Length: 117
Length: 117
DNA sequence: CCCGTACTACGATGCCTATCGTACGAGTCG
DNA sequence: CGACTCGTACGATAGGCATCGTAGTACGGG
Image (cartoon, rainbow over all chains, first blue to last red; front, side, top):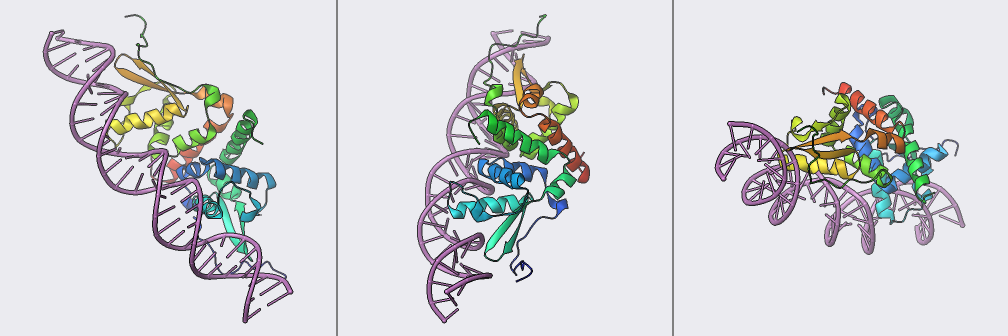
């Protein structure tokens, strides 16, 4: 088909105005979720849930993506059977200029300090 | 006495190298603790625990200050009966350049958006 | 239509944490 | 010394959350 067909079922997202700093910080205070956001920022595009190889079951993965979505850090949309995830960079930059970049930079520096990739 | 005498009992702090980004973000994901850090940054000096008028009991206040200290966000030192709290700005800036300012700016913007002072 | 893939929903579990109250220790001042 | 202030320690409690397993739903392809 021509258009990707964003498929009927859609998911509740907070509006930009509803995004809370505490919620964003809480979402990013989990190592797995921070890692997800780092990868999303690195590719600068949407990624399917199954793209990530996380050391937890799929149930837990679903849970983490939901936390990220409900805190306003990512947007999720179904595309066929896949659920695509994208960083809400515009919204976050609009609300908190410079914060996302500072966080990503901090995460990169910490990854460099420790063995992490 | 002449010198403030940092009094015998002292408290365990993480070294700069031990500070973890996830821990910092978790510490700041609590509204009370974020508020404390905002006030410390605003005055740019040390403040006693009792300076803060928080809507919780003293036990809970102690708990929050400990979380902030153990995550490396603040340093605490006894000075007589008072326990003085100071932001570890140098350490945080050294580890994560720009992060603290971005966080404080984000908190200020959010406070402006909502009724908050 | 049936099957495989992708993800979800739900219940259970164990840990972490925010909160409180009470009892206590350290320091200061009269 | 004695009283008062500041903050701690400890136990209890309730709620949140990361994790899992199993069962189920949506979609696409043979």
